[in-house]
Image 1: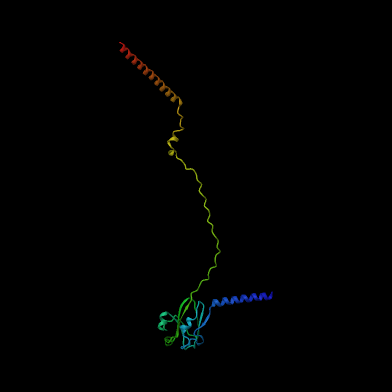
Image 2 (image 1 turned 60 degrees about the vertical axis):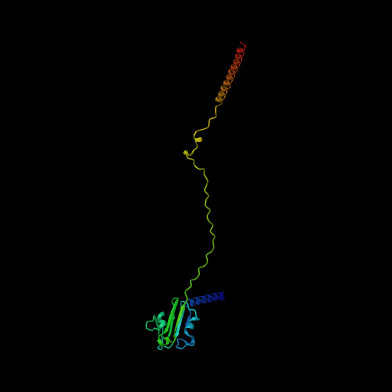
Length: 213
């Protein structure tokens, strides 16, 4: 039990120390072992190019107090080695500077002659990358089914009815009228035949009578 508690406490201390170190950043010694010198063994521009700087990192300038200084200047003053209008001055001999933002920083020597000889450097601090958000679990969304419309018979207005509907039920034709008219026609035809036959007989008889006389 005691060894497990000790291991757990040691792990927590290591994690805490790691997080504290990350939040404070790294400390860079400008110029390496040569420090902030007039004739360094490695050019300051090359030293800055082979390192990567982030927010909260620290630069350490080592030089003899009173003999030189470090000036943080604008871009134009950097290229012209203008020492009269610095953004910030470091003069205590063992000077430190902490990067509080991303982007370029311009450093020159407080001695204009040394600046013109190359005692200056540009450092570009990388942008802070936000921590990626944890992935959200995928949940498929099923669309809700819409109710189907129920079909209903179309409404018929009174004015849209056909004439056959408004005329009422159809009446069956009367058979009495047809039979009467048929009987009348047959009787008329019989009378005509009788009259025609009588006229023909009379005509024949009359003609014979005239010949005999």
